[in-house]
Each structure stands twice: as structure tokens, then as C-alpha cells.
Image: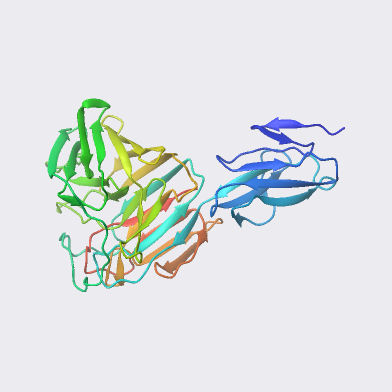
Length: 383
């Protein structure tokens, strides 16, 4: 006799059903005909795979993965051939490309959007794969006459050291410049202490002592109120700093445009960030809803890793890589090496790679750049 079961809040027919992903919903029609219908409800433009299992241990794809549109996806199941089968919907990580052409090395024209109903993902900054010859932190505004304008708001400048961590904990600075493209800044605080709050700030900068060094306290992370995060590893011994370069917008990403409506720019406005010095974690609250926890405990002379715990809506991209490419010799990143679902590697130029479903995206330069020669490669992993 056929029976109904409920697993993870979803009605199930006798061929059984399990919901395993964080946010997609999978339902089965409770009718008495031999052919039942699986119906998947997810987020538009996210990629999903329906999987089946007979033992809730070994799962195999049930059809091909799909990019979800505005209407629920349906798939027919024959109950005669699929008795006592469990089904689940799994969201796959995918990347899309909004990169456009520029002649200005200060214009971040490389935009890669990552989507997934993720619980966590990681961002890793490493030194370039080539031998760095120039640690100079300089800008190049050559051929920057054709850039597009954004809104510009006036602020009262301020810089403040909120917390001095010394040898054991991070030192936290907050900055507000005289102008910024977003109308409101963020509140920055330390250890949940309201007396440390600084309001309407545009940047939070983290500084950390390098263990066993002879007095080196480099900054390694800058978080902007528009969601941009810049991350670098500790500099090699004998060098005071490495250059910042590519950044990652952390949080539910929206796309804004220049005043003329031509140039896209990703953004995720932050309402507040509270940094916990013992745990080395940042608690972020977004202006449009949701929160995130950023663990920044791992920083060495080889790499810097930020692990993001997602507690924000995933109907938008969960993060975006933002960088610059003018030419192979003038760029912050030129190439993306990405791994597909089978962990096979693929290599594309940043301007030409198309939507990809995979596990990891590594943004790198294959030959040295004359601009920001020491700026890091960035790896985003969302499995």
C-alpha cells in the first residue's frame, strides 16, 4: 500500500522524497496516476541539480542541471520504475561574466558574479604566481579620459584607531573621506562595545602583527561600506607591504550603473560591522537585509583566507569579483582558471569566459603586470 511521508517539511509519496539543499523547494504531486511530477522552486538564474537515491547515502543526478527561470521547473517520474526512490534538489555554484572593455588601469571593468544557495564560501588571496619585481604602490591614470561618472556625496573626513591590538589582537582603524559614491556610510564597532562605535564610516582597515617578525604590523584587509573587500597576504620578508588589487563584494550583490547608464558596478551596502578581536571575526549587517560572518583568522606570508558564513538572501549573487584588465601587461587580473563539477580545470581570459558551473574560480595573471605588480591573485571556492 502506498503511503505518504513528510521529510524536511515536504509531502512525499511512497517513492519517498528528501529535501537536502538550503533553500530550493522540491515537491511531488500527490495524485494516484502512475506518473508523478516533481516540481522545483528556486531562485531565478541560480543553477540546480535534482538528484535521486535509493538509500539516502549514494546520490546520482536525475536529469541534467538547469538554470532556474521565473516559473517552477517540473519533471515527470514514473512510479513503476522509480519506486522507493528519494529525490532532493541541490544548488550548484555558478559564475557569470559582466566584464567590459576599458583603457584605464584604474577602472575596475572585470566583474564576475557568483551564485549559489550557499551556507559558506571562502576567498583566498595569494601572491602572484610570477616573481614579483616591484612592490611600489602606485596608480596609473593614463588613458582615463573616457571613464563614466557616478554620484558623489560630501562627507566630513575622519580617521580613528578604534582598537589597538598590540602583539596579540588586530588593530582596527575606521576612515571617512571627504567624498564617496554612496550616500551613507556604515557603523564600525569592536567587540560589541557601543562606546567604540564610529558612524557613517566608509572603510574599516585591519592591521595585524606578523608573528616572530621584528616589529611588522601591516594592514591586510580593507572593508568598504559599499561591500567591497580588499584582501592581501602578509608581505614577504624584507618588504613592508604588497599592493592591493582585485576586490570581492561580499554579500547579496546588486548591479548599479554610472550616471549615463552605460557602466555597471556591483554593490552591497553595509549598515554595520562589528569586529571581534579574540575570534578574529567580523559580523556584518547589510542595509537591505541579512547578515554575514567573516572569519579572518588565517593570514600568513603565503596567503590570507576569509571564510564567509551566509545568512543573507541568495536570490542575488552571493559575491562578485571586481578587478581591472586593460592588457596582459596592465591589469590586476587577466585569466580565470576554474574547476568544473568533476574538478577538471579550465582556463579562460577574463574578458571571454562565459557562464560556468563549478566549484572554484582562480583569478590570476600569467605574466607580470606593470601596474600593481605585487597585487594578489584571488581564489573563490563555493562547494
